[in-house]
Image 1 (cartoon, rainbow, N blue to C red):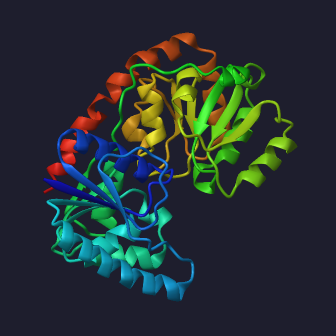
Image 2 (image 1 turned 120 degrees about the horizontal axis):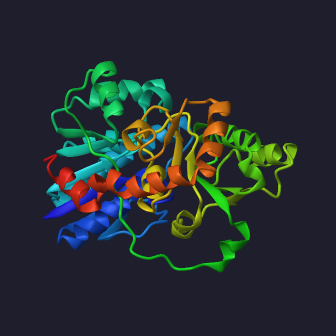
Amino acid sequence: MKIVFVIQTLAKGGAERVVSLLSKEFSKQGFEVIILLFDKKVSYEYGGEILELDLKASSNIFKKGINFIKRVKRVREVFLEQKPDFIFSFVESCNFVSILSGFDVVVSIRNNPLKKHQFWQRVLIFILYRFKNVKKIVTVSKELEEILKKRFLLSNVKTISNPTVFKDSINKDSMIDKFKPFILSVGRLHEQKNFKLLIKAYNDTRLKEFAKLLIIGDGKEKKELLRLIDDLSLNNRVYLLGEKDSLDIYYANAKLFTLSSLYEGFPNVLIEALSFCLPVISTNCPTGPSEIIVDEFNGLLVKNGDQKELSLALDKLYFDKNLQDKFKKNAKNSIKHLEINTIARRWIECY
Protein backbone atom coordinates (compact mmCIF):
# COMPACT_ATOMS: atom_id res chain seq x y z
CA MET A 1 0.00 0.00 0.00
CA LYS A 2 1.36 3.41 -0.98
CA ILE A 3 0.79 6.78 0.68
CA VAL A 4 1.69 10.14 -0.87
CA PHE A 5 1.86 13.27 1.30
CA VAL A 6 1.72 16.61 -0.53
CA ILE A 7 3.16 19.60 1.32
CA GLN A 8 5.06 22.76 0.37
CA THR A 9 8.20 22.00 2.42
CA LEU A 10 9.34 20.11 5.51
CA ALA A 11 10.75 23.28 7.07
CA LYS A 12 9.82 24.18 10.65
CA GLY A 13 6.07 24.38 11.13
CA GLY A 14 3.02 22.66 12.58
CA ALA A 15 1.75 20.93 9.42
CA GLU A 16 5.30 19.92 8.52
CA ARG A 17 5.81 18.30 11.92
CA VAL A 18 2.57 16.32 11.54
CA VAL A 19 3.70 15.01 8.13
CA SER A 20 7.04 14.10 9.71
CA LEU A 21 5.39 12.08 12.48
CA LEU A 22 2.80 10.42 10.23
CA SER A 23 5.35 9.49 7.56
CA LYS A 24 7.55 7.79 10.16
CA GLU A 25 4.61 5.95 11.70
CA PHE A 26 3.23 4.73 8.36
CA SER A 27 6.71 3.61 7.26
CA LYS A 28 7.03 1.67 10.51
CA GLN A 29 3.67 0.03 9.77
CA GLY A 30 4.92 -1.17 6.38
CA PHE A 31 3.37 1.40 4.03
CA GLU A 32 5.40 2.73 1.10
CA VAL A 33 5.60 6.48 1.82
CA ILE A 34 6.41 9.31 -0.59
CA ILE A 35 6.52 12.96 0.51
CA LEU A 36 5.91 15.27 -2.42
CA LEU A 37 7.55 18.68 -1.85
CA PHE A 38 7.43 21.81 -3.99
CA ASP A 39 10.56 23.13 -2.27
CA LYS A 40 13.13 20.81 -0.65
CA LYS A 41 13.56 22.50 2.71
CA VAL A 42 13.79 19.76 5.31
CA SER A 43 14.02 20.43 9.06
CA TYR A 44 12.37 17.26 10.36
CA GLU A 45 13.09 13.56 10.25
CA TYR A 46 10.75 11.67 7.96
CA GLY A 47 9.79 8.18 6.87
CA GLY A 48 9.86 6.95 3.29
CA GLU A 49 11.34 9.04 0.51
CA ILE A 50 11.12 12.65 -0.67
CA LEU A 51 10.20 13.59 -4.21
CA GLU A 52 10.93 17.26 -4.89
CA LEU A 53 9.21 19.07 -7.76
CA ASP A 54 11.34 22.24 -7.56
CA LEU A 55 8.34 24.53 -7.98
CA LYS A 56 9.01 27.05 -5.24
CA ALA A 57 6.49 29.65 -4.15
CA SER A 58 6.67 33.10 -5.73
CA SER A 59 5.39 36.49 -4.57
CA ASN A 60 5.00 37.72 -8.15
CA ILE A 61 1.33 37.43 -9.19
CA PHE A 62 2.11 36.48 -12.80
CA LYS A 63 4.69 33.88 -11.76
CA LYS A 64 2.33 32.60 -9.07
CA GLY A 65 -0.32 31.85 -11.70
CA ILE A 66 2.14 30.11 -14.03
CA ASN A 67 3.55 28.19 -11.10
CA PHE A 68 0.10 27.01 -10.06
CA ILE A 69 -0.60 25.58 -13.52
CA LYS A 70 2.80 23.85 -13.56
CA ARG A 71 2.14 22.37 -10.13
CA VAL A 72 -1.21 20.91 -11.14
CA LYS A 73 0.31 19.35 -14.27
CA ARG A 74 3.35 17.94 -12.45
CA VAL A 75 1.40 16.64 -9.46
CA ARG A 76 -1.02 14.84 -11.75
CA GLU A 77 1.95 13.25 -13.57
CA VAL A 78 3.40 12.05 -10.26
CA PHE A 79 0.08 10.56 -9.16
CA LEU A 80 -0.23 8.76 -12.51
CA GLU A 81 3.31 7.39 -12.16
CA GLN A 82 3.07 6.39 -8.49
CA LYS A 83 -0.55 5.14 -8.41
CA PRO A 84 -0.94 5.84 -4.67
CA ASP A 85 -3.62 4.18 -2.57
CA PHE A 86 -3.86 7.24 -0.31
CA ILE A 87 -3.15 10.92 -0.99
CA PHE A 88 -2.98 13.29 1.97
CA SER A 89 -2.53 16.98 1.16
CA PHE A 90 -1.65 19.67 3.70
CA VAL A 91 -2.36 23.42 3.56
CA GLU A 92 -4.26 25.30 0.86
CA SER A 93 -1.32 25.90 -1.52
CA CYS A 94 -1.09 22.12 -1.88
CA ASN A 95 -4.77 21.26 -1.40
CA PHE A 96 -5.96 23.30 -4.39
CA VAL A 97 -3.36 21.67 -6.64
CA SER A 98 -4.07 18.15 -5.36
CA ILE A 99 -7.82 18.54 -5.89
CA LEU A 100 -7.36 19.80 -9.47
CA SER A 101 -5.19 16.76 -10.26
CA GLY A 102 -8.48 14.85 -10.45
CA PHE A 103 -7.31 12.09 -8.09
CA ASP A 104 -9.12 11.10 -4.90
CA VAL A 105 -7.52 13.11 -2.10
CA VAL A 106 -7.89 13.90 1.58
CA VAL A 107 -7.16 17.59 2.14
CA SER A 108 -6.19 19.09 5.47
CA ILE A 109 -6.85 22.65 6.59
CA ARG A 110 -4.59 23.61 9.47
CA ASN A 111 -5.66 27.11 10.49
CA ASN A 112 -8.68 29.35 10.76
CA PRO A 113 -9.49 30.55 7.20
CA LEU A 114 -11.47 33.49 8.56
CA LYS A 115 -8.32 34.77 10.30
CA LYS A 116 -5.49 33.41 8.20
CA HIS A 117 -6.58 33.35 4.55
CA GLN A 118 -7.09 36.02 1.91
CA PHE A 119 -10.47 36.47 0.21
CA TRP A 120 -9.51 34.56 -2.95
CA GLN A 121 -8.34 31.60 -0.83
CA ARG A 122 -11.65 31.52 1.02
CA VAL A 123 -13.49 31.55 -2.31
CA LEU A 124 -11.44 28.59 -3.57
CA ILE A 125 -12.07 26.70 -0.34
CA PHE A 126 -15.80 27.26 -0.82
CA ILE A 127 -15.66 26.02 -4.45
CA LEU A 128 -12.92 23.37 -4.69
CA TYR A 129 -13.55 21.56 -1.42
CA ARG A 130 -16.94 20.50 -2.84
CA PHE A 131 -15.36 18.53 -5.70
CA LYS A 132 -16.30 14.85 -5.77
CA ASN A 133 -12.68 13.67 -5.58
CA VAL A 134 -12.29 15.29 -2.14
CA LYS A 135 -12.72 12.20 0.02
CA LYS A 136 -12.54 14.14 3.27
CA ILE A 137 -11.65 17.59 4.58
CA VAL A 138 -9.58 17.12 7.72
CA THR A 139 -9.47 19.89 10.31
CA VAL A 140 -7.33 19.95 13.44
CA SER A 141 -10.03 21.06 15.89
CA LYS A 142 -13.78 20.73 16.39
CA GLU A 143 -14.12 24.52 16.45
CA LEU A 144 -12.47 24.73 13.02
CA GLU A 145 -14.75 21.94 11.77
CA GLU A 146 -17.77 24.00 12.81
CA ILE A 147 -16.42 27.06 10.99
CA LEU A 148 -16.15 25.06 7.75
CA LYS A 149 -19.65 23.66 8.18
CA LYS A 150 -21.39 26.89 9.14
CA ARG A 151 -19.46 29.56 7.24
CA PHE A 152 -18.37 27.58 4.17
CA LEU A 153 -21.35 25.18 4.10
CA LEU A 154 -19.07 22.15 3.78
CA SER A 155 -20.33 18.83 5.10
CA ASN A 156 -17.58 16.33 4.32
CA VAL A 157 -15.47 17.43 7.29
CA LYS A 158 -13.68 15.39 9.96
CA THR A 159 -11.53 16.50 12.87
CA ILE A 160 -8.25 14.66 13.39
CA SER A 161 -6.14 16.37 16.03
CA ASN A 162 -2.39 16.62 15.76
CA PRO A 163 -0.49 13.58 17.07
CA THR A 164 2.15 13.32 19.74
CA VAL A 165 4.98 10.93 20.54
CA PHE A 166 5.85 10.36 24.18
CA LYS A 167 9.60 10.39 24.89
CA ASP A 168 11.14 7.83 27.27
CA SER A 169 14.27 9.79 28.11
CA ILE A 170 15.96 13.10 27.35
CA ASN A 171 19.66 13.70 26.90
CA LYS A 172 21.20 16.17 29.34
CA ASP A 173 22.54 19.46 28.02
CA SER A 174 24.46 21.71 30.42
CA MET A 175 24.23 24.60 27.93
CA ILE A 176 20.78 25.52 29.20
CA ASP A 177 21.73 25.50 32.89
CA LYS A 178 22.57 29.21 32.64
CA PHE A 179 18.88 29.94 31.93
CA LYS A 180 17.44 28.00 34.87
CA PRO A 181 14.90 28.44 36.24
CA PHE A 182 12.89 29.46 33.19
CA ILE A 183 9.41 29.48 31.71
CA LEU A 184 9.04 28.61 28.05
CA SER A 185 7.13 29.66 24.95
CA VAL A 186 7.59 28.43 21.38
CA GLY A 187 6.40 29.77 18.02
CA ARG A 188 7.09 31.95 14.99
CA LEU A 189 7.86 35.56 15.86
CA HIS A 190 4.69 36.70 14.16
CA GLU A 191 1.76 38.84 15.31
CA GLN A 192 -0.44 35.70 15.43
CA LYS A 193 1.62 34.37 18.36
CA ASN A 194 1.26 37.68 20.25
CA PHE A 195 4.64 37.53 21.99
CA LYS A 196 4.36 41.26 22.71
CA LEU A 197 1.50 40.46 25.04
CA LEU A 198 3.48 37.67 26.69
CA ILE A 199 6.56 39.85 27.28
CA LYS A 200 4.46 42.69 28.70
CA ALA A 201 2.49 40.26 30.89
CA TYR A 202 5.74 38.69 32.13
CA ASN A 203 7.05 42.16 32.95
CA ASP A 204 4.08 42.69 35.28
CA THR A 205 4.65 39.49 37.28
CA ARG A 206 6.46 38.72 40.51
CA LEU A 207 7.92 35.60 38.92
CA LYS A 208 10.24 37.65 36.69
CA GLU A 209 12.47 38.06 39.75
CA PHE A 210 12.71 34.27 40.05
CA ALA A 211 12.54 32.82 36.52
CA LYS A 212 13.61 33.87 33.04
CA LEU A 213 11.40 33.75 29.96
CA LEU A 214 12.72 31.82 26.95
CA ILE A 215 11.04 32.21 23.56
CA ILE A 216 12.09 29.76 20.84
CA GLY A 217 11.35 30.62 17.23
CA ASP A 218 12.22 33.08 14.49
CA GLY A 219 10.30 35.51 12.32
CA LYS A 220 9.62 39.01 11.11
CA GLU A 221 8.84 40.46 14.56
CA LYS A 222 12.27 39.71 16.01
CA LYS A 223 13.63 43.27 15.86
CA GLU A 224 10.42 44.70 17.28
CA LEU A 225 10.42 42.20 20.14
CA LEU A 226 14.08 42.88 20.92
CA ARG A 227 13.27 46.59 21.07
CA LEU A 228 10.41 45.89 23.48
CA ILE A 229 12.66 43.75 25.67
CA ASP A 230 15.19 46.59 25.76
CA ASP A 231 12.52 49.24 26.50
CA LEU A 232 11.29 47.19 29.47
CA SER A 233 14.86 46.57 30.72
CA LEU A 234 14.37 42.81 30.43
CA ASN A 235 17.61 42.06 28.58
CA ASN A 236 18.81 39.69 31.29
CA ARG A 237 15.39 38.12 31.85
CA VAL A 238 13.83 37.50 28.41
CA TYR A 239 15.74 35.63 25.70
CA LEU A 240 14.83 35.10 22.05
CA LEU A 241 16.72 31.93 21.22
CA GLY A 242 15.82 31.56 17.54
CA GLU A 243 14.92 28.21 15.98
CA LYS A 244 16.19 24.98 17.53
CA ASP A 245 16.60 21.58 15.90
CA SER A 246 15.20 19.93 19.03
CA LEU A 247 12.99 21.40 21.74
CA ASP A 248 13.02 18.36 24.01
CA ILE A 249 15.70 19.62 26.37
CA TYR A 250 13.82 22.90 26.84
CA TYR A 251 10.48 21.24 27.52
CA ALA A 252 12.16 18.83 29.93
CA ASN A 253 13.74 21.63 31.98
CA ALA A 254 11.12 24.39 31.91
CA LYS A 255 9.09 25.26 35.01
CA LEU A 256 5.98 25.94 32.95
CA PHE A 257 4.88 26.61 29.39
CA THR A 258 2.72 29.42 28.04
CA LEU A 259 0.99 30.13 24.73
CA SER A 260 -0.18 33.69 24.04
CA SER A 261 -1.59 33.36 20.50
CA LEU A 262 -4.41 35.45 19.06
CA TYR A 263 -5.58 32.46 16.99
CA GLU A 264 -4.41 28.95 16.19
CA GLY A 265 -5.42 25.81 14.35
CA PHE A 266 -4.55 23.16 16.90
CA PRO A 267 -1.30 24.20 18.61
CA ASN A 268 1.30 21.42 18.54
CA VAL A 269 3.37 23.18 21.16
CA LEU A 270 0.68 22.75 23.82
CA ILE A 271 0.51 19.02 23.11
CA GLU A 272 4.30 18.75 23.23
CA ALA A 273 4.44 20.61 26.54
CA LEU A 274 1.80 18.32 28.05
CA SER A 275 3.67 15.25 26.77
CA PHE A 276 6.56 16.42 28.96
CA CYS A 277 4.16 16.86 31.90
CA LEU A 278 4.67 20.61 31.89
CA PRO A 279 2.16 22.87 33.66
CA VAL A 280 0.67 25.03 30.90
CA ILE A 281 -1.12 28.34 30.45
CA SER A 282 -2.79 29.37 27.20
CA THR A 283 -4.95 32.15 25.88
CA ASN A 284 -8.40 30.79 25.10
CA CYS A 285 -8.04 31.79 21.45
CA PRO A 286 -9.82 30.34 18.43
CA THR A 287 -9.16 27.50 17.65
CA GLY A 288 -7.70 24.55 19.59
CA PRO A 289 -6.55 25.46 23.11
CA SER A 290 -9.94 24.82 24.73
CA GLU A 291 -9.95 21.35 23.13
CA ILE A 292 -6.55 20.58 24.66
CA ILE A 293 -6.73 22.29 28.03
CA VAL A 294 -9.45 21.70 30.59
CA ASP A 295 -9.19 24.79 32.77
CA GLU A 296 -7.89 24.03 36.29
CA PHE A 297 -7.47 20.32 35.38
CA ASN A 298 -4.39 20.11 33.14
CA GLY A 299 -3.68 23.82 32.69
CA LEU A 300 -5.04 27.35 32.81
CA LEU A 301 -7.02 29.12 30.09
CA VAL A 302 -7.01 32.92 30.10
CA LYS A 303 -9.04 35.43 28.14
CA ASN A 304 -7.63 36.00 24.68
CA GLY A 305 -5.53 39.18 24.48
CA ASP A 306 -5.90 39.97 28.21
CA GLN A 307 -2.48 41.05 29.50
CA LYS A 308 -3.52 41.41 33.13
CA GLU A 309 -5.20 38.01 33.26
CA LEU A 310 -2.12 36.37 31.74
CA SER A 311 0.15 38.06 34.32
CA LEU A 312 -2.05 36.85 37.16
CA ALA A 313 -2.13 33.32 35.75
CA LEU A 314 1.66 33.21 35.41
CA ASP A 315 2.15 34.18 39.04
CA LYS A 316 -0.65 31.92 40.23
CA LEU A 317 0.80 28.82 38.57
CA TYR A 318 4.46 29.54 39.21
CA PHE A 319 4.06 30.03 42.95
CA ASP A 320 1.47 27.28 43.56
CA LYS A 321 3.34 23.97 43.83
CA ASN A 322 0.16 21.99 44.51
CA LEU A 323 -1.46 23.33 41.33
CA GLN A 324 1.66 22.51 39.34
CA ASP A 325 1.66 18.95 40.69
CA LYS A 326 -2.02 18.54 39.81
CA PHE A 327 -1.44 19.68 36.22
CA LYS A 328 1.65 17.47 35.86
CA LYS A 329 -0.27 14.46 37.13
CA ASN A 330 -3.10 14.99 34.65
CA ALA A 331 -0.98 16.05 31.66
CA LYS A 332 -0.20 12.80 29.85
CA ASN A 333 -3.56 11.13 30.34
CA SER A 334 -5.28 14.23 28.94
CA ILE A 335 -3.54 13.74 25.57
CA LYS A 336 -3.36 9.93 25.51
CA HIS A 337 -5.90 9.89 22.69
CA LEU A 338 -3.41 11.80 20.52
CA GLU A 339 -0.77 9.07 20.40
CA ILE A 340 0.64 8.70 16.91
CA ASN A 341 -0.67 5.17 16.17
CA THR A 342 -4.23 6.21 17.03
CA ILE A 343 -4.05 9.36 14.87
CA ALA A 344 -2.47 7.48 11.94
CA ARG A 345 -5.35 4.99 11.95
CA ARG A 346 -7.89 7.83 11.78
CA TRP A 347 -6.21 9.21 8.64
CA ILE A 348 -6.48 5.87 6.87
CA GLU A 349 -10.15 5.67 7.86
CA CYS A 350 -10.78 8.84 5.79
CA TYR A 351 -10.75 6.61 2.71
